[in-house]
Length: 400
Figure (cartoon, rainbow, N blue to C red):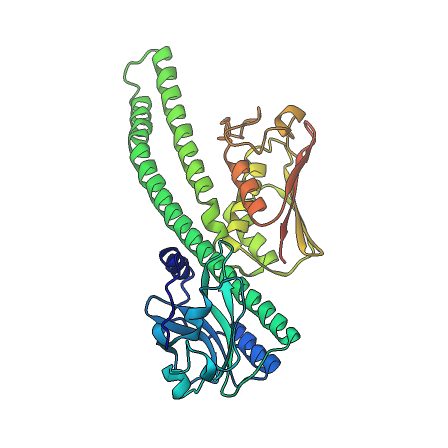
């Protein structure tokens, strides 16, 4: 018996084999279907997907053989990987000086015929073989050999698909860990920044309340300091909400009773107080990311409430299903948004010239968050508005 030679690229070959994380994994139907087909096409009782490890051959798929692995020293497949561009065929092992006294020839499974196609990666590294085995002499026809070679290529494609899936899973997991770390950092940093800001807000309020002999100019200065601190606090809260937008999209989708969902949001935001509400909701239950959709509507409805200075304010909400898209509209009869502001309104930190009912400007984060969430849900958003004629936000999300 002649032991198989070790390939010159053995170290690189083993490294690539281990990258695929295939050894000692469970049996899988995709591979078993290929070996069953190979066995039927070639008319052999045994068919294997064999991977050549450092000291063993291990079977990813095993049709007709009772053991999960064997010693590499006795493996026909360990010979085959030395010829990565050829189909390795042994018509009758009993007449072959390399195998005539091999234990697998003399004893169970009594290998007489062997044909193995090397499983070769894109960088020409043979990881193992797709092989067929019989206990009697045999020759493969040209068609049988071609079919076996085609099946071997499909095995390699499964290997590649598995590797890409594993790489993607690792990437997703790494990104998840990094996002969690960044979110925790943002939360801690925001807390540390907001603590002194809150102190400034409190102190300025105390000074204003005590009327401690400040001049009119001094009182205005204290008022300005307090207002600036409040704006900065709101800005930090907005940045935190924006940083969490990707996390919201990672949540599991669930069924939502949409009319009930909108009713709760309107009550929570106090939208029904001294305001005409127009609802055209042509959808019932929808399947989507609830918290993400909630943040979208909270931002849009809250903006309509805060910036509508009309004497008879109204809020309109529309919803309908068009194909695989849910289409929504949130509109009001407020001052509208000028054309120059419309061009930058969804850009972070860009604000309009409008001020809220209490005279405060926006942070320029809310609509940027809305746009990020909608695009994350496979949709788009656009604004329809004219000065003094209200604003209507049209957006859609994918539910396929």
